[in-house]
Length: 204
Image (cartoon, rainbow, N blue to C red; front, side, top):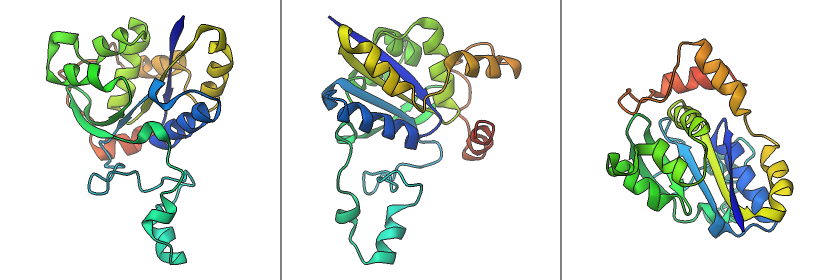
């Protein structure tokens, strides 16, 4: 039997690190999905990459220019689940970068209400209604989500790995509600890059 584990992260960097750690722990990249807000254009659509692929906080194109290395050299060792990344426009969230087995469900969510929108897509993937609501709002505010399908008998070990840099959903929900948030609204305007920058500063 398998179960789905999902965790929220503050940015694409932490989420990609979680994907890398899951693969290192033996999870097949075909069983991992990643959703990342792209309202701040952190994903370079022209090259099909996140410029900071080695997770060191620096745009690899700058590093390559400084060392004389080519993009191909610094792009090595890419996280398997990030191959085939694609951009989707999700109502209430705006642009996200998505990869993995959740994409088919999200494609339906992007098309309309047939799947119940983003929250419906996440609940179909095994996320509780309450958590799905917070995950959707977090994506709207610049966050990232990683979901993994794992064997039941290995779930505890893999949960510990995903918890290393993840956000406590209950804490984030409480913070949102303290600011007047009640639930994810697919009709709400997506956050602007400036709003996302300010939001991320709250959780550094």
